[in-house]
Length: 138
Image (cartoon, rainbow, N blue to C red; front, side, top):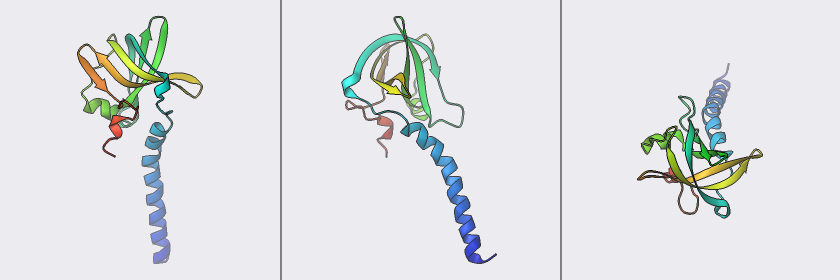
């Protein structure tokens, strides 16, 4: 095999490997709808479940299922790694006040959380325009 073909083969393997590492994370973030200030609402409820991605997928989104009155609401918080960085203690049974944007994803209702208040603790996930704060370093 010529040197040129070996080098081309190495580049191809590297590119495919890089795509396998980056692509799933990019899809997890890119597939969310945009925050819409026109649909922003405040709600109060009880955390029914905190859904965290599997170990090794910390860049994937953390969600919570919130019971508010008779409604059960699916709430997208942020990447799990950001939740960990903020030292969040959200857990099943917590009473929270939430501000977020009501959006549709794949035909189902979803809330993109901007702020979650539990007691005297406030977890800010997006700025006042709805831009994720976990992306500020980019």
